[in-house]
Length: 420
Image (cartoon, rainbow, N blue to C red; front, side, top):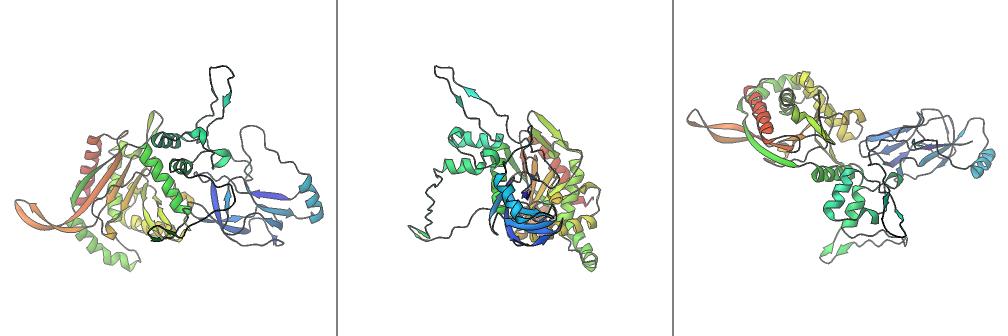
């Protein structure tokens, strides 16, 4: 029987990928674990290894095509089988699913339990003559919340997600009045009333960021506090240490100091290092700080693990490596997991204060602005000092205003005193 290799459920909320390129063609012989092709998910570009040795008899998705979890990518004729026998077996094959709640994913490690990220299926009945059962709605709480905000009837939407789940994009499309086109003919205008336009498909990282930010803004109750830090001593410390770091090939910025200060202070302010799950606030006992990275494909947030226990040099190395890996899209998926707090720096491109959006389900994010020279009153005298703008956005369901303020005063104190 030819083996149908299906796109596996790798978790992380990944439901689809784009075939960047195939590394094999139909008729090629392959060995187990040999890379078959490169697939771009909303997290990274990964090589998909062959689960078996044999001959490639069909590539089911062309390069540039989209594949969803559970769909067949490649059919492999195992060693010892003939193509003629394989065709007969394929024609007579009846597709079956395993028993129980475990959907078939075709994973190379067997059946993978799919994450229960949707609300339990409910059957709604009407108490009237001729009662009929309405179809169940498969949607996450965030999707349901968005539909409520936009006044969209979920029963009227056909979900485009796995198993017919309704996605945030489905709700947004319904709210904007866009209809699915069933005619097979799609007319794309190259201009509008005012002139020529260009349309760029929303996919990959940008699509994931769009869904994530929409979920965050419609779920968390977000409030931003803004502060100014006298970073004169901190900037001086960086200048003193920068040359020795450069000799070791390390680019020293202010970010390692900020990440270290944040991680140390999170230990004293646990609600800033938490998430809300149902009716429980989950206080995390690890201090993993995500660092937002601007890439050509969109925003990515690699995570520095155990930031509170690392020295400035280690943090500088980690941040630089994670940023480079993110920009090259060759980052390990584990480096994008496990964050408990995020730092976003727009100061490098000239922004002072801004309102960062929480990297949901975290409870807070710190925005770092541009280091400026400003006149400051110090000890009754006006001096020119280096000032660092900071913007803290927090989930007001989890973090009270007083808790947020005390956390920031703690962070500011460490940065101004250079206590790392």
